[in-house]
Image (cartoon, rainbow, N blue to C red; front, side, top):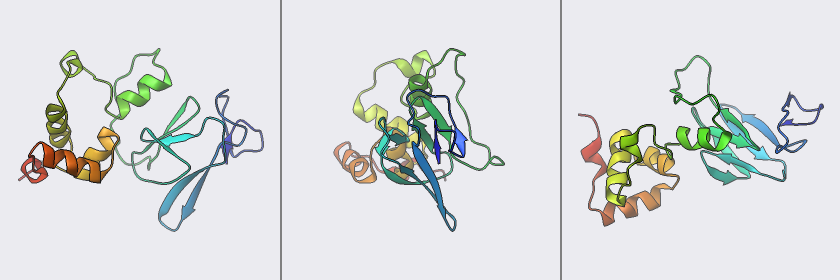
Length: 156
């Protein structure tokens, strides 16, 4: 269990975290997270969850504490962050919701945003959904509406 209680396996000094906030579980090769009815809940990749499987590179948030899920021996790119960055701005940057450069900060129409996500994710619809904080079904609707084919963005 993770939380603020001294009885937890990992103890955090985060006032927005409950005493017993969440539990990490493992069933064979699959890892997951369970919210233990905490006051502020948990998010995985910006989505509120109560129970969720975890995958390499997932960003887990409990209170103001951010945790990056994955094996230490694998390279996970981390964004450049100012020293005074708060949990909200870090989460937004890591989930691709906050621009890293002025050029990225300019407003985009929905089609441009979708093309940028497809390019960044090399046409992988699941990754596009994760990046945009949506689901595959919605991404396929957007692709159809804007007459885009994810295959056009896959490396040759």
